[in-house]
Length: 131
Image: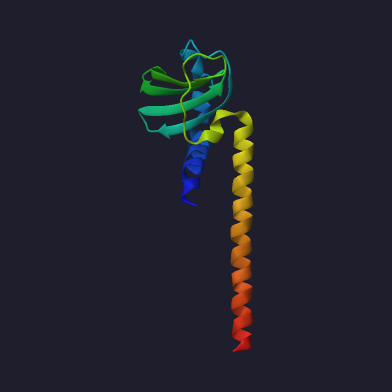
């Protein structure tokens, strides 16, 4: 289940700090529109945000007296072609449908864990009665 840690971390960071980065993709002139974004890392002075739209770009921001300012841009992939054909983990963030798939996967995994715990407890009770 440790593979779920990045998803949880990014979702929590986005939930907590996403509003701060909602329109900041416009600081990168290559990004035309954004379907979604995830905050990958966050501290009081620095943040990395992955924006998905016409491009998949990781933007790094530094906090200044005027707010967040983009300090670095790395275009990972492009729908329009070009040479940006990289990969980012978690891969589900490459599409807007990917996050729904990931959430469904997590939901199914949680159901499986709950079923395992439930069946294990029932088996323990049955074994106690048999003794």
